[in-house]
Length: 183
Image (cartoon, rainbow, N blue to C red):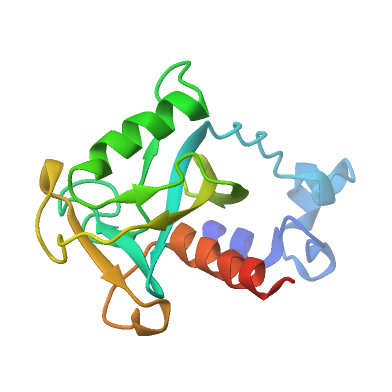
């Protein structure tokens, strides 16, 4: 009953002290501190991870990869990318990504001439996506599995409905639309 009373009256913003049947014995009410309680600890800062992403276009389609079924965001589709490791910089990360993609699809212009950044927050970390717009030169890996169980596909952005994609990828695609709409 006390917990129900607290949930209904002892709100963090504008507590309902005048209607409270136990306000006479309430220490917070007596000390005129009801609107300052409960004291919430500051949320810890989320760690920031940097992910390099390539938006590889070829004949109106973009290259997508499917994440491993096990693990974080398992089975979702996204633009090819990887997290920077340790003190690795963009240049080293792009070389590593190019090597991973290189024997499956032909990718030109890595590092790309155009790039932009998109932030996305998950419950346990913040992700900064450094997106590099690249040109593809084809590749025959549509639907085939690559390293670590990844599947790659060339998909037209207007035909993504059957593919579950990550929230970060949705943000990146919106930004790509804006980038291509600019003169």
